[in-house]
Image 1 (cartoon, helix red, strand yellow):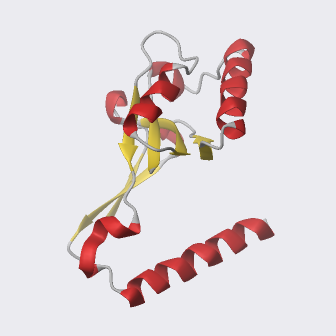
Image 2 (tube, rainbow, N blue to C red; image 1 turned 90 degrees about the horizontal axis):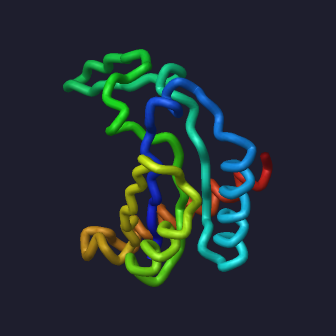
Length: 142
């Protein structure tokens, strides 16, 4: 079972304040544990929303909105993708993370092919498999 682990933004992350050396070391050690345990599939931190844009869709119209975005409680500062057996196991891992007071982390199960039922036809599965393989090959080239 895959999980998206969402690190919520706060005033510091939105202001572009970088973590301390201690936090970077502690998080690096935690990430190393995740990798050694075979849990970690991906991880990334995000720049503040002042460097981002949003695109709003309305019919055929596309409106681009420049950051920063006001509601920090709804923003994402980074994420992991983990592979685990259950939500309980994901919770046990995140409780060990070296976050400081006030941090908020959201764990969301990711859809797997079987979750889509009969609508996800063999042709659509083959297309997804082909696209995932091509995306991995593209990453390997970088």
